[in-house]
Image (cartoon, rainbow, N blue to C red; front, side, top):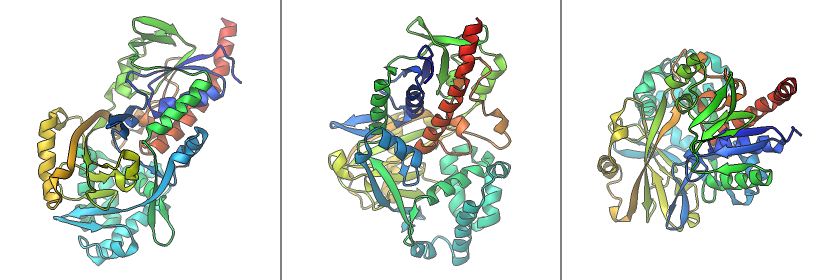
Length: 448
């Protein structure tokens, strides 16, 4: 056990902050978590609709996500975790095609037989490539064209890259597609190649809430609606946080905030470090959520190759989640990732609805719009870090240049993706790195 006098502030109550608090408290540190929102969760927070908690943004738990499943078991909500075989499809040139079984793959009309073979080769190749640092030096287009061919790239990969990365797609290294292919193949089971996913009743927040309760039993304190005004630094060391105009003293401070936000909270940190944090750019997201009376399609995710459609995909989460857990409603998300220079981020909700519904009607001409109960626009500014080629040296360290100021956010997870599994796994590693330095704090206190 660590010395009970070691008081730590965790800034940010998302899934990383709560997991971090849990792991630190298990080892005896006295942890206080500060969250500016009304609830914990961050991007994994929820909205209430008709008395039911629903995820603001869609999230996946794959059958291969063992860190998430371990936390779910430890937090006591494993009985609310369910496994489901999901389906996916492609929307191409006005048609919807299934893309689930080897037969679907072999008969996939948008590609000819040779192109289907090369697409399959791309998936296989990703499983055998293990050197992510090599992938980081290869432009994603070069890698995909070399294996899949130009025809497959133009028909499948190019529109998906533009949809996912907006105007930043040209600078993306191969790691992004490589990581996604490796992650998704981990969900395939058996010779039928069924894609298995999991869901928690009432969403990600079920885990966050249960984990927070475990934290509180270990002595963790949570402060909601408590935006940090400054991380106080004296003589090169983080000594506390200023919140509500008052300074609270701590032995160490750990930030889980997006890098540009952290930069604005540490005016007394070295200027070059603040500049490094400030220059990090993120993709935002525009994510309309449709609450429906009837199901829209048989797929969990419908990928879109039509570049004229603004949203990335159609994700009907109630083809994963049993609708009985959301009062019989059906829920679909129509996300669009937004680059920092995209003015669409400033569109009012009504403009988003008008543009989205124009394409929705084209994709689903037979769907009765009387079944659409609500069209709710959800937004977030800092969703996925943009990591252009040749910028790995700009990933900040856990131990910042400020003594006893630590940081962890999705920038630092690279080359993994910013999903719940990668975030929780990183939070556990972050906790271990912080704990390894606690004896140094104690020695410094004894010397002083």
